[in-house]
Length: 118
Image (cartoon, rainbow, N blue to C red; front, side, top):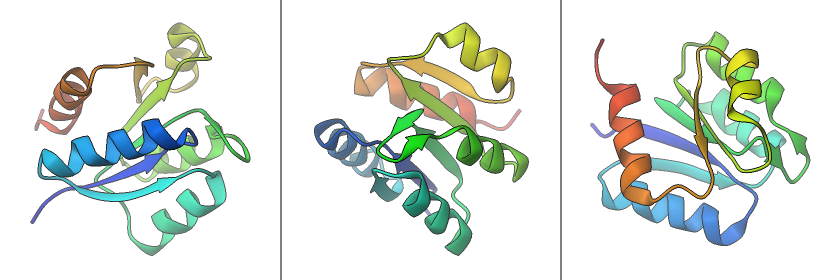
């Protein structure tokens, strides 16, 4: 069974690039979700194995969504260009922060590292 990755990204081109990259790597993709509400609804229907979140989504900041996923023990990768990595790391110490733009191969490497058994 393939692992499910939730993608929450409001920039259309970036969102579809991420989804294509993950599907080609063999992951099942949930999304892309441009807004917090649709991503939250998808998580309620079926918990993802990992989530990649842009902090700034179409309907606001994804802090609440990130915290809910972290509280549910879902690994979270915060993928953002507008926020300081140190600021996000301080707010979400259990999340991984990746600056945008991030080459697809690098992002897949981060995903493999996050999903690797400790």
